[in-house]
Image (cartoon, rainbow, N blue to C red; front, side, top):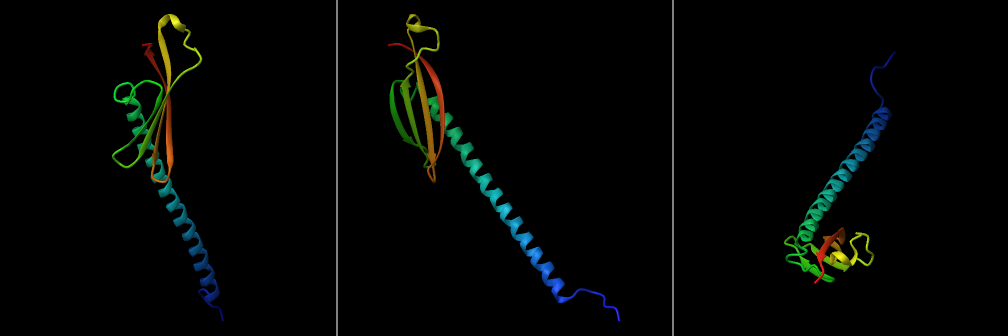
Length: 125
């Protein structure tokens, strides 16, 4: 006599394989969402750092020193301005210009940091 259908063991093996595959898919999906959230945090911090960088020379003095502050969302910013020691501009003393290295760091939530660096040119006082 021939039987049609599945045995209990075959059904249990199929459910076990399906459960393992479902767990792997859910874990991958959750990891993707975490990475998306992290990428968004970095994008926001980069925009905030650029905003602070734009204030250097107007609100934040363009002179050697370090400056700190806090943004509306609780992130902290730190600006370090230093005179560049080597003369790569080729202008030398004749132009009466100073190169400044400006570093802006924005730190948020769990101590993650985005840092931007640029050069600014100013007239020697």
